[in-house]
Image (cartoon, rainbow, N blue to C red; front, side, top):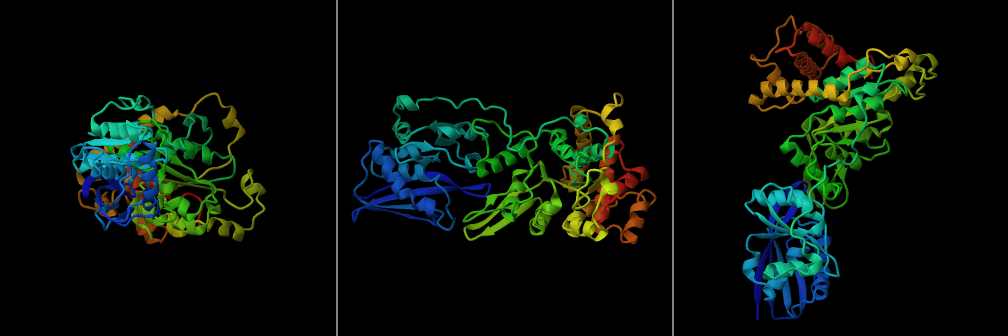
Length: 515
């Protein structure tokens, strides 16, 4: 006698999910299980995992021909998160559980051969996608329970075994070893790569500290040039601490990316702190922007979404890897097309580059440098002009003098003090640009900056205009100078930039290093 049942799951494409209907049909014929609907190898192998899990959970495996369809059929299905829904659909079609129990219920999880329910990647964006489709009830592995419960409006139940899920569908008491009634309370999320330290620890680099504050206040990209020991890495590591906490929307986006990548610590809440990624200079293109076989995984630039991507010793990176950042840095997202499908990952980052001025990297600076001028040009030339043109702020740090190390007066402002000024500046920017759809100065398009209602008077922009006429600035660079000027005005509490702000912005844009 034929049987039919339908369960619900969620399929992910990047950080975006779509509800998938898992249909099971039992019919007379040669016993076997066929899975249709563009499954990848992991989904196809569910045939053996599900059968072993059902048998080891004390249930009878249907001695019939079983067809499982994953719809919509045109959507590629990836990963092991469909196991639980496949098992529930087959058991319900066989009459082991009531059909009504599956109505409006989403089941996500990987099955072990012993019937255990294992955590999967991407549970948070999966539940968020389901709730956006109007679904409220979810069953997930106990290891994913806290993460899934973070999704607004979701009613989530966590189970450790298939036996516990079967009991839930039958309305029975769960097994003793699977009887938790609520997810553990989430801990404060600490994202992988979090940086530590106070900005006050960076002494003798007033220009560098100023550049970090301006970068944080406006969301600008930053390049730091200087000899070893000048404080480039210290400044970059302290930038995330100066950035404001993530708002609800940004926290959901960042948490979703980290969930898909499988680096979200178990039992933590939404990521509220700006993430920080500092890949080694041997990192490949795939490591930086994302990649891998089948469906591409997010790279460092996506893991740093709404945070900081720091490339120390940037000329040592592969030129191909550096140039791969150009489009994502400009657009705020990365599109990865692979044989397993095309996915989009968010990549709205603040890029920070650090570089020594030459290959010998003498700590004493130019006085002890043994490199020829051509060697210095070749070294810094590994950072391509188009990429450098996208960097708003370029700062040269000089070696720290001994007097700065032992100075007992004029202590630098701490991270907390600078962060307060940054919050005030960002609030001013949101009040100004929020009505036209922009949240920070760095994201405002040039067309808006040059619109009649925001255009600065010619006397104010005279220095920047001369720089573009002499070829020192590109059109993109001119717009970036204007964005920096607006940030300087926000930090100073002015309603609009004056000529001093534009001149300072031009100097921060110029730097002292040419490539």
